[in-house]
Image (cartoon, rainbow, N blue to C red; front, side, top):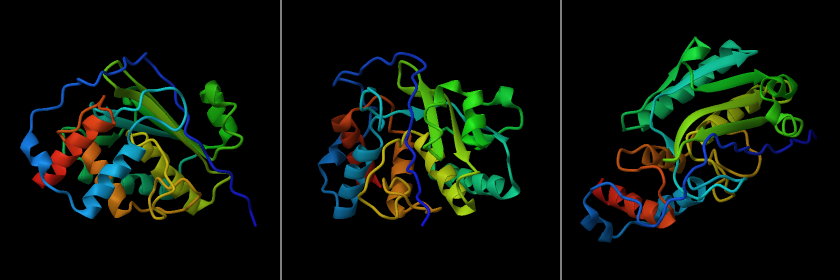
Length: 243
């Protein structure tokens, strides 16, 4: 049986992010709604959000929410194929449907207009473009890197899928997982087998119901960057009880 090497998430900081204190402003909302009781599934959403959306698997970054606030303009390079481009379009459409704030994911044909780069190809060629990844690509079939500013808002990023090591189904899985984690849902968990954030190796190419809820809640107009666990829970509870 072929041994599949688990990939890891790499983190690089473009600016030194300022740690947020507990008095980070939370957007004005119907806070009275927070006292309402959530059902069991809604409570699982809150718990899973805090597991996945605060900080990163590696590095010393603070465990707060981070997200894109300017449009994500994606350039795709390397050894592209019609099948992978079609798959990216499917992922892009699903994400744009889940996002309810003033933010959209675009694919651009000019790299100078992009703030995110997807590379399909070998790890070696990827490391030639991004030398900082040279120590990671030999054992990782997919990687992403994101950069943020002092307000914990993402500014740029890049990722790759090793199409030489992964088969077509695995390529699609890696594309979906790495790109989705680049949105700010950057941690893994062993809790849900069908989740795109499952820490064990899977080849799922669909978002689970709870995955979709995490995406839409992170990109809900009320959720902001820089919230810690307690603050993000307050916002989550208010959103969920108002729906």
